[in-house]
Amino acid sequence: EAQVTQNPRYLITVTGKKLTVTCSQNMNHEYMSWYRQDPGLGLRQIYYSMNVEVTDKGDVPEGYKVSRKEKRNFPLILESPSPNQTSLYFCASSLSTSGVGEQYFGPGTRLTVT
Amino acid sequence: DAKTTQPNSMESNEEEPVHLPCNHSTISGTDYIHWYRQLPSQGPEYVIHGLTSNVNNRMASLAIAEDRKSSTLILHRATLRDAAVYYCILRNYGGSQGNLIFGKGTKLSVKP
Image 1 (cartoon, chains in turn yellow, red):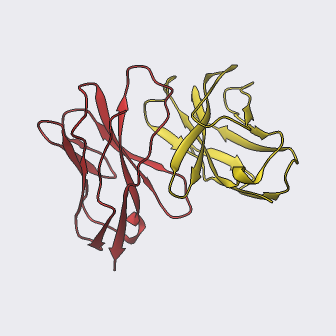
Image 2 (tube, helix red, strand yellow):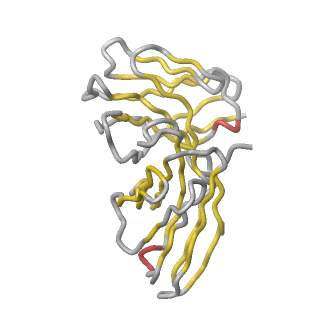
Image 3 (tube, helix red, strand yellow):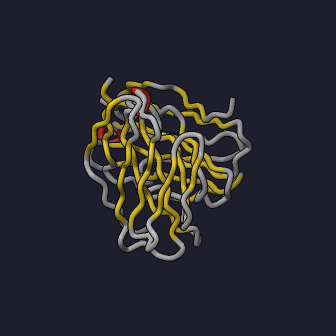
């Protein structure tokens, strides 16, 4: 089944403790992206990647890192999480390099930072 | 990307058609009209997209006004599973970072 998977689905952590949220897609998509969703603010893009080893900042990149060493994986790294990063995170992928076609989303990761 | 306007909420009865409107009066000639939906506790899901002509797929139909300043997503027979927030989004394919800008969308409730 074609899908985007994220792990973990739920995570509670403390301020400053490094964490990684994994994202993997099995559709051989070129484009991958991370969003965060907050009440009243909609989805905001954090980082995106048009291809392996090519990543770029989205609208809200501060406090986050990403890497794209393989086409299928696009982990999101929080080196020193803070409470304002408590949010619902979605990974997405798209066949087109620019991501303007249909985007497939993962199920989401709900992160709480205390 | 140009702005869209949608009603905050709509209600439908199960097995009846649903017409979800979207206004986009500032749409440019190269903007595609995309629809996504987000079911409770799930990630957004692609529904349909079009440029000028009406489009049909297994999930829905998209009717685009002749002047392209509005469009309507049509669910032919609503089911309880169609209860979700529906987002109308304009996408310009002329080189962007690919980010989807979701507005507030229309929350669709389906009554049995």
